[in-house]
Length: 194
Picture 1 (cartoon, rainbow, N blue to C red):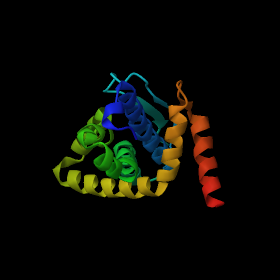
Picture 2 (spheres, rainbow, N blue to C red):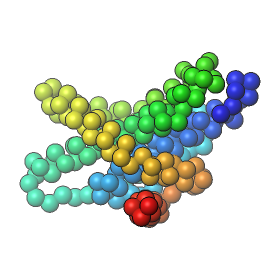
Picture 3 (cartoon, helix red, strand yellow):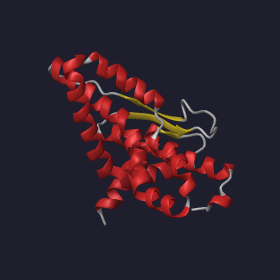
């Protein structure tokens, strides 16, 4: 980690890129966990492009069976996938940055918090739309349940999320769905063998 004197635009761009990559990897890994078809994930390099700093395209599978149960699956899994980006950023911040920045970069604490504990404006909009459709009584119940579920899943799968984020940072054109699936499954398989 650089000290205050060494912090320049490159450092900010680097931290912003890491935050974006962790965010999109969180969406991709959690969507894969639910069996969603991944289409593509990318981190946009333009640091000024704040609203959509990257994206993870995926398709929700069609469920067969009881329409009410299927609707609950879609609502629950959609909320968890939307929450996953910011939760992955929070886990990365807690594990790798929080203590270091306090010791080495006290004046940068608010900046790094913004990079890793903010963002996901499009996700927040999608979450609000889904929650508003659930009515007043269901909104808080679903929100609480899905946030807890997201925390458990992201924490469990964080090693693969971190791995995918590094791959995303090395792929300026993004990673297509088939390759994302292969990377996730290869990483998971190698972890099981250790």
